[in-house]
Length: 282
Image (cartoon, rainbow, N blue to C red; front, side, top):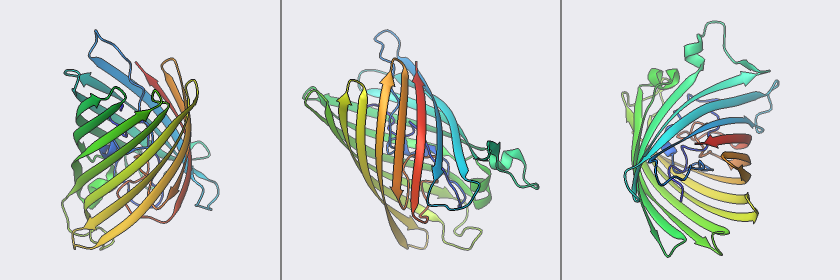
């Protein structure tokens, strides 16, 4: 299983609620970076670009969320590795950054950073399991206004490959905590506290480097007042890799998205998000 499943490849959008940044879920996002393979160099890296829009929103002109990011990974040995990721996300309308006259660019450009430490062990040639810890300080203006300091968490992943890895089943369980300054948001709602996310993915290699994948996720959000909310998500995606490049078209359907470019930790109205992703690894 490629490391950092989710930070990593790419993120979606937060349309109507203050965005909690992208990086926390490095391992629960819909696609993975294609890591460069090298026996001599322990370092590898990637760049990524993503554009997405929520087709459950009827407003015109349509809002597109664009995200540009990159990261680096260092392998300590065959089992241990660490990955860092940085990204910048913005809402655009007609190709221009969406901004009210009283807002500054610092308030509408949403930066994010994240780091993840992984232990991966392969078995039976095509299978692997991974344990990981991760952290993400929250830099964006909406998070600062709400008093969100960051997200920390841990989890485990299991990847099972069959028929020479033509068919792969992956499962991820992640438990994360939002570090809050305040018990209540600006809207006087109890702030989120803990997030429990489970995701199962099925991937089939159709022809050469073309893949079709489907994933289903469940998320429980527990607030500071002990109330809980549930949401689901399902995603279908077709992807291809060519040399060091990767391309993907994805469609997310459900109450939350797990790619990071959508505000991952909010329960929001139903979403139908189409997105295009491109990445480059080195």
